[in-house]
Length: 107
Ligand code: FES
Image 1 (tube, protein in one colour):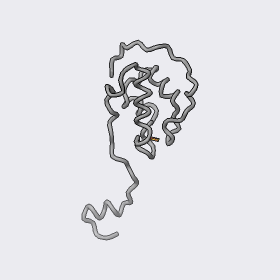
Image 2: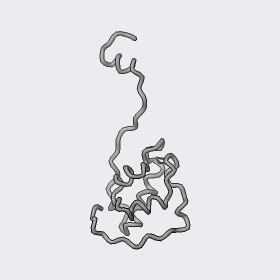
Image 3: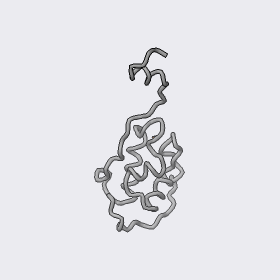
Image 4: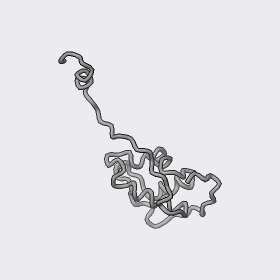
């Protein structure tokens, strides 16, 4: 769904716009709706713009809701939206782990 000529309905505040959708990043439904009206038409754009799905849950709890909200704003079926690009979760790694993998002597 990257048709930039798409004409959206006028943005109007909704009663539940304050509802938190991504708890990790504290992103509300209203912020997601507003991002769509600012031109973020894909789930990847929404993720990069608002950081939804980039918190601790890595999108496991919020991505389905984000998809539904974006689809509703674009007036399309949620199934037509391509999933956001996924990346493996990142965790800090201590240097000794990398040194050991590289064949270095014990540190
Ligand atoms: S609820 Fe935080 S990344 Fe999904």
